[in-house]
Amino acid sequence: MILSKLPRALATVLIIGLLILGVTACGVGGPSKAERLGKDMEDAAGSVPGIQDAQVHVNMNTSGNFITAKLTGTGSDQAALAGALDGALPAMLEKTKELDSGSFSVSIFSPDDTVSVGAAELGYTGGTSLVDIRDYFLNRP
Image (cartoon, helix red, strand yellow):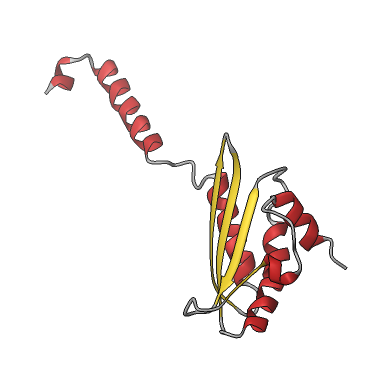
């Protein structure tokens, strides 16, 4: 073996270096900021009555912050879905307060995906700006 031909100290340093490289390559740092935010938003939505499932995808890169959320409600009635979305949005958007910009899109669907409700059905008439949507849903009377 090649290591047996090297001086003991050099072989030890080389082995330690390879172990450190291997550990750091495995992503010991934990989840990224985007992954943590997505999980926090999913947890916030999931805690709202009427929400069966929340799937949030957060993409943070040099072009900006892009958040898409697909919620699944527990029922198929459009009014019930709207009520669940109305409860989930403030809880989810509260988690984005450290973001100064980005886009956000969200819809809630019935379990069979035949009925859906978006922010427009709750009175929001703006675009996909995260700041605008957050201001609207967090500052309503």
